[in-house]
Picture (cartoon, rainbow, N blue to C red):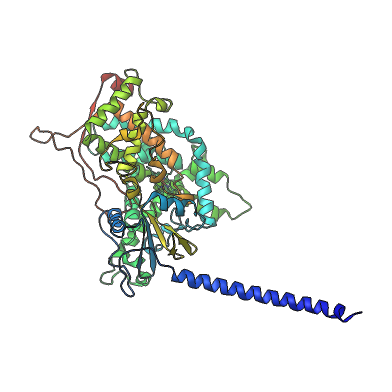
Length: 522
Ligand code: HEM
């Protein structure tokens, strides 16, 4: 045996140890350097931060907050800005590019939701998947919904949508409260899909749902309640001066419980006595896996159902309300749409989904409604679960990320003269939908893994609603007590809110022909 042959293995061992040590050392340095580096990277621009409270006083908490965020971005000449408020880091994305790069392409880490004390904890909505973090429970609940309402099979719901829309047409002619009638239309349809509760039977559930969803929209608006910035405030007793939010939270939680339990209980009872019609709830209950915890699965079904109901009623109402107001304000658009309908439909006929390819102007009206007054101008806040770097800026882990859909849909480059209601912007020279114009439905329904699972069903409801109302009625100003036509005007819910919808307004629905009245049997 030579010396070499004895020492070689030891050398090898030493070498290996040495190599590993160097590797470990290098890696540690690299990680530290990256951390140090990323710490040295600048945050995106934004208003100047004060010590401790950061931008607490810059965060808009009143009015149409999407306009203020848009203005901040313009002021800082950036489509991505950063604000901080006590423990929160907030990123506003003000362009389609920034939203696409982060919420779509990096959706693995941009798909959670910020925890909210007021809405999630004190009001109890945190268990429903719309507000849940990106976790297994979110996946389980979302799966329940997408199994019952598969985006690939929306045609299944067309007959229900037609029935609900014809019911709406029958009441619009005598309407005293348009927004209430629209709520009934949306609720009747969504109650049927979600719980199998049909027609007039759905109406008693409506009042609770409207109040619960209004409270959700108010409490869900970032910045609306200080307890979201200072969570310790949640321990303040209700009687304490200034603790009004605690009383509100208690009342709003009761509304949530009522909305969640009442319709669910009815569906279960009907399943037990064999009278249930198929619905999201009944189908999911039938599919319960008895080898796993059935009580937990029931809670998931309840949460998924109330989320579908909640997500799908106010939003469609807001959009159809915006459409009616737009028609009141833009009579020439109504005329153009009605000319198209009259050229395709025989007298007395009502639109069907099969006519969609022949009615591009109607489809353009739907797009313009969703663009001109988007229902969810800030979509819903996302939360980034890992530290990230974008265009040289540090995006801190745990930042709340808000896409400014309003700004995206009102940018002059994609939509010249953006404040004008102009469906023709979506048509090419032949009057067909122009594929080169950015489709607002790619933005109006949110982004990445959290994108709205009800998008297709919502678009179908809106399309048939718009086509049917314009076939039957001319929308004209109301007449005042002196017999004069009132101004063509409407106002929008002033906020603070995440939802953009018109305040109740007056108008008349004037039947366009006797034939249609006969078809509807009114
Ligand atoms: C005009 C109608 C609608 C609009 C504008 C709308 C818009 C949105 C938006 C912006 C989001 C948030 C997406 C994100 O976080 O990026 C969302 C989420 C959601 N929407 Fe809709 N939506 C509509 C109709 C519906 C309908 C009809 C349903 C139910 C059938 C529904 C159910 C949901 C649910 C369950 C979520 C939560 C998704 C999640 O967090 O994973 N929505 N919607």
